[in-house]
Structures are given as structure tokens and as C-alpha cells.
Length: 107
Image 1 (cartoon, rainbow, N blue to C red):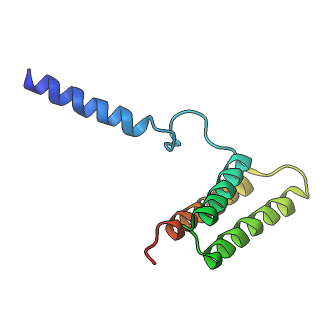
Image 2 (image 1 turned 120 degrees about the horizontal axis):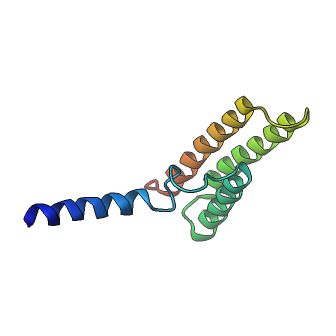
Image 3 (image 1 turned 90 degrees about the vertical axis):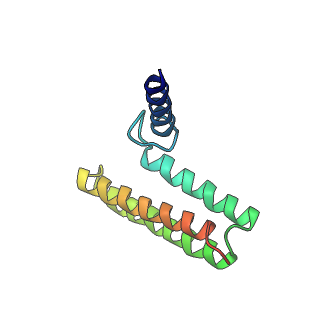
């Protein structure tokens, strides 16, 4: 009986961890546009709440703006190739991590 309870607890924990909205492996992955919008919201929220200093906000906003201009340049010759999409996703992931780090650093 005790083993069954332990197994159910472990399974429940795994479902809770993997089923959350932040897990990209389940459900529909975020589009490039959604990722950009999400990062913009995060930057704006960080500025509003003071989680980002003015300097930190400028740095991550400039990086997001740079990524957006790179996307526009990549799209200028038509659709994005798979390699270009992967590059954009990598840049956005790097910026997402930077935003998180800056919002959660100890001042």
C-alpha cells in the first residue's frame, strides 16, 4: 500500500512539473511573435515594478530591438529558412534568460 502511495505522489509530481505552461515540450510551442510579445511584457513589467533598473531595462530592450531588426532583415528576401528560424529562437532564448537574470539579481 505504501508503495502505491509513493508511486502516485511521484507520478502526480511529474505531471504537475511537465504539464505547466512553461514546459515547451507539451502543447503548442510559442511562435516568434509570441516570444517577442512575452519578452516585451516582461521588460515592461520589470520596469514598472522596479525589478529592472533603468540601465538593465535599456540593455535588454536594445537586445530585443536588435533581434527584431535582424528578423526584418532575414525576412527581406522572403520567408525565413529553417536555419534562420533556429537562429532567431536561439537569440530570443538567450535574451529571455538575460531578462530573467536581470530581474532576479540581487542589487
